[in-house]
Amino acid sequence: MTILVGYNASKESEGALREAAVAARARQVPLHLLFFHVHAPGDSMQQVERELHQGEELQASLDAIGEQLRDSGIEVETDLRHGLKTQVADTLLEIADDIDAQMIVLGWRPRSRVTEAVLGGIAREVLRKTHRPVLSVPLDPEHR
Image 1 (cartoon, rainbow, N blue to C red):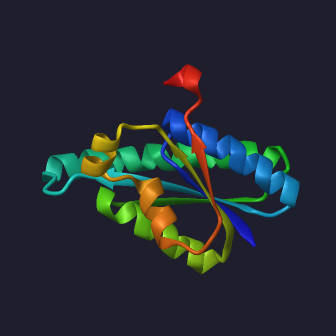
Image 2 (image 1 turned 60 degrees about the horizontal axis):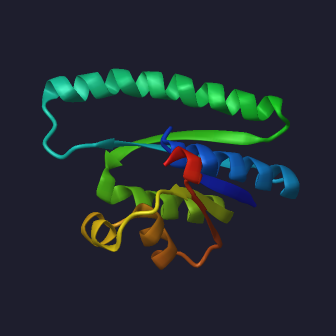
């Protein structure tokens, strides 16, 4: 079994990564670190080229995080995916099924009910669609 953590370099996902690492170490299971790079629909070719270059930088950053986790004794697999924001939750769930994730760990920022209703929420969608345990890590109040 593996712990799956969704990560996007935000303050919310930094907290999720910390908690996922603690859980992986305590359970002595591997960590699957997913970075989903979101593209906007209708991106121009120039934008796509910039994002491809940015993807290379993201992969290097993700590899460095993976190496730090390995150095701390955690077995980790890094995974960089690309797509639209509407695909993030389903991608997380597909990967969770593929790796038979013991738990999914996600960060989230508290929002108003109106904002949540309009924008939705990846954590909320994952919670609604999965049968797996989900650890939802709120943004630390001092970082809001």
